[in-house]
Image 1 (cartoon, rainbow, N blue to C red):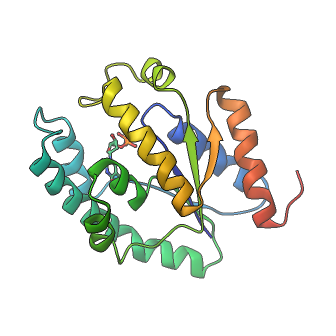
Image 2: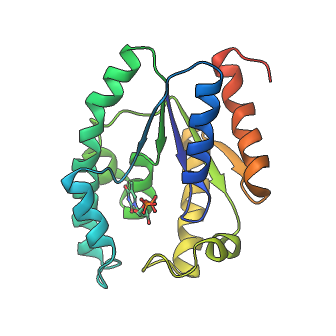
Length: 191
Ligand code: TYD
């Protein structure tokens, strides 16, 4: 099973992925935790480029889309191997982030046609003001208008693709409980 957490920056994905990993281990699973951008050389290049003052420009975003798609391919064998060993793969972002952030749905989908589609995607949704409070000043092209646009795109994509949408406003613990509540039936667990 391949589970992905999506959401705008400041939505708490990284914290929730860690809690999810710990919980899965506690109940006897051996999960594989991955994240995008990855730690590959392409991923490192992406992180560097995201800090550029040109990061929001159209052609720059097209370049980033290509790099994100390339970076993602490093994960595909890992995911396949883990799944064949019966592991649960949990991911902080996937190609859905490219659709939302890089903004040319059809082309991005084509570009990522070899990327595996998660079996379950959970969107951590929250007000932009809360997200900005949580990660103030950490990322360059994230301002309110931009994040509002990204949030809207996420919610639309969630509807089209059948994501589980969680209200991530109510603190770390509540969100973790909600994630467990969504995943448990998929593992035939009662919590
Ligand atoms: P983020 O989840 O913040 O990673 P980290 O916590 O390691 O810095 O992701 C970095 C940024 O990359 C974030 O602003 C979203 C963006 N991004 C895209 O624009 N497209 C993509 O395909 C992915 C995976 C991320």
